[in-house]
Amino acid sequence: MGNIITKEKAIDIMSRIDHTQLKAVAAWENIKSLCDEAVLYKTASVCIPPSYVKKVKDTYADSLKICTVIGFPLGYSTGAVKLFETENALMQGADEIDMVINVADVKNGDFNAVSNEINAMRKITANKILKVIVETCYLNEKEKIELCHIVTDTGADYIKTSTGFGTAGAVIDDIKLFKENIGPDVKIKAAGGIRTIEDAMAMVGSGADRIGSSAVAPLLWEILK
Image 1 (cartoon, one colour):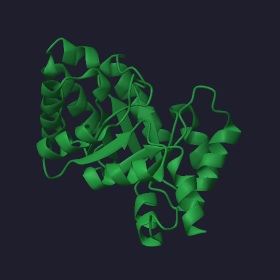
Image 2 (tube, rainbow, N blue to C red; image 1 turned 120 degrees about the vertical axis):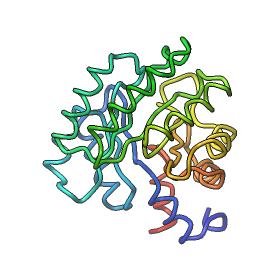
Image 3 (cartoon, helix red, strand yellow; image 1 turned 60 degrees about the vertical axis):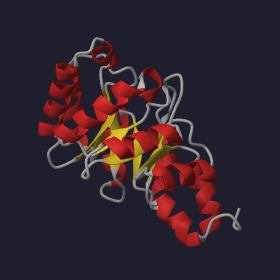
Image 4 (cartoon, rainbow, N blue to C red; image 1 turned 30 degrees about the vertical axis):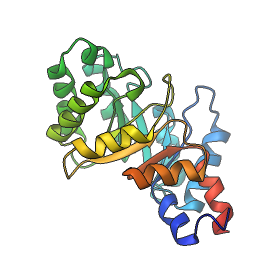
């Protein structure tokens, strides 16, 4: 593996990873192990369930960035519920919010509803990072392009491919499509099914700025030790 990637490249990829643990059965020992690794590896953040945000903040203070998920994983809770969930997560110490859109609104052609929900989320996350999960596995190309425009217009920081709980995760073609259709101030997060260093490098090489993964950071650390 050391012949495939330099230490400099490994550090760069590591700094882009949201080290992730979102399983329903994740116990505190799993979350703590994730956070200990994130501090050691210097990942961009840990991405954890909302129910663990306060405990992680109390335990780790400012030694890592805390990302959490809203409306996860299906996205069809109401906008009011997502706003409350977000406000609570921010109050408890979250630094970054990954929200799931209501894909049913997209399928109904109600892009105004999608836009309004993201706008409302942007207002309460004004000084935090907001990532919008569009769940690409359920979308056609036209819908993906329209969502690129909406994420750009609403001022979100990132468009994110997937929850990792859908029928498929991130694919290179979607990263390239996003790159062609988002505005200059929007970044891309690839997530779902990224399990190897080669996967992560391919996503970054295609235009992703962040990587959501539980597996890649420990592999990179083997190079950096």
